[in-house]
Image (cartoon, rainbow, N blue to C red; front, side, top):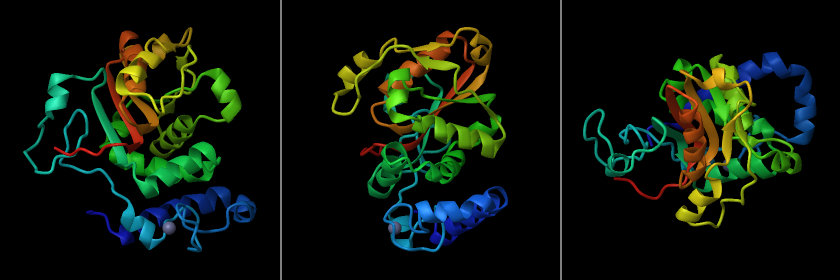
Length: 263
Ligand SMILES: [Zn+2]
């Protein structure tokens, strides 16, 4: 891992600096709800959203060399612009995929904390790591959109974790956030537990552009955000809807990537 713990502290200090300005009146309330501790294991660290040294060293960020399209890490640096066999054999319906980290233990805890335990306080830190992993694509995009939930699921879950990440990223990079442009028009089964083919069938035709929102997409460079990339069926279906509506360039950006393979 090329990152060191000190660099991580630097990011957290920067983040803490922003928060101190914006959130000072709220800090006492936040302390009551989430006492300062490691965001993964909870051990006391005296700071919010930081990780303890043990969890920090267990994080595996995804870094170059990787396939320029699918972001799959290469074990050897084959030179700039090299694509994986998978990207050549099966070009995806988006231009590139980037993810911040591998979906193993510390990262899975952060994802679950945000998704199932309402730890929306983790989103700014997670968004910051994604921003870095985007390789400048967020800074150069016209707008950022989350992979949407169907309205019935939104109702039961109260918030969309992808939208939380996208919203914070848009704020940090001063980009346009489009939470209502891409819609999930068909209720789909949970993808968890389904095979690759079943996942693809499950989400086919599930996404559409909201009425009157076509101008948000046509000719635009977009960043499509989700929390975890597994088989890619969901983001592929969402990207197809954006492409059909005339998106000029689509970067898929996820916080975590479930990936065992390197090339
Ligand atoms: Zn920890």
